[in-house]
Image (cartoon, rainbow, N blue to C red; front, side, top):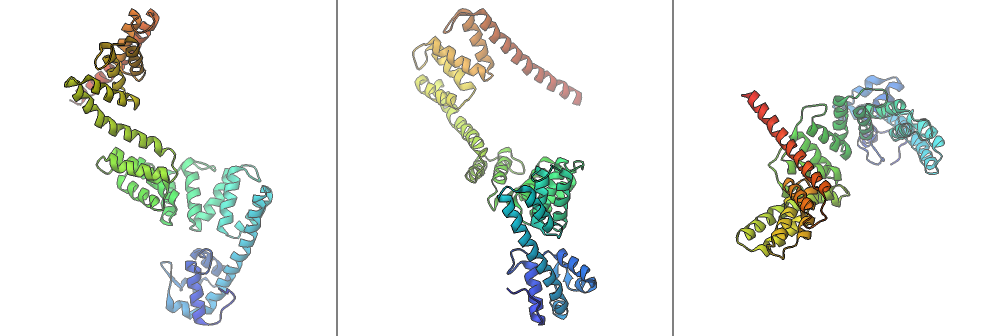
Length: 394
């Protein structure tokens, strides 16, 4: 669309709508940018008549279209010039001429060109093309945030969350800007807002608001938000516990690129197998089908279950469902002991002392006995501590 000065009221009104909502432009011209331009032109009162709650009023838009055209064209011209300078800065950056890129970005940024302000902030924060300067980085992000830019609000909030740029940590202000950025559709900001509501940072913990923000971030495919939704379902925060719903979200998160989600998927799948295999193993053992019981315990042991290797060791030790084999029994007991099974530690100590299934060693026997007593002491300490608190409560 031609952005030269329009003469007719209709064209002036349309141009105001295009500027406000981004039609035929790469991005909308911010409302405060138009107001700023009107102030510079010396007639701010006229511009104030054109808006109500951020909306262009049709009647006033037509009435003051000639004035509006002049202001808008001044703004559009500024945007076009800044965009050209910014493009040169991008080329310099790609050529690793960081000092030159920063100079060009700064030239556009001082004229309120938001993409350049963001780049200046990033370069000062990282020390590219200049010495690292968190205060200047914070200042540029603040300028973009004041212009109601989602990316500027996100980075400004991050720095205040971490207490960077010479300012103390300010969780409440960080949450405010994460939410503001999230309202503009920034998925990372939505995720960060959800995390703060979940953890009670800068506000009281609120699982419902956490879910709302995580869900908004997950809709466009933000992987961390999907994983966070899985956590809420798995832990029962705001919902009844549901491993199935949690698993669905973890799978979506993994497919969206969250590598850490696979560990959560494995954990839930292992737990689901434990719930399935454990009663089968117990029932087979009770019914005397030791061979089948050993098969189920073996599958559980492969999944890292703590009780299963002890059960396998016990069956090899007694020759149940298989031939008696002290070497295999000790090996399984040791695996269980390494995972913290107290009974397995005791068995390892006895077999090391007797040289049954392993080399005789009083030193190794004492090691297992001592570890067993230490673990027992921890359990008893925790029990008596809880008992004492219960007594104090009456």
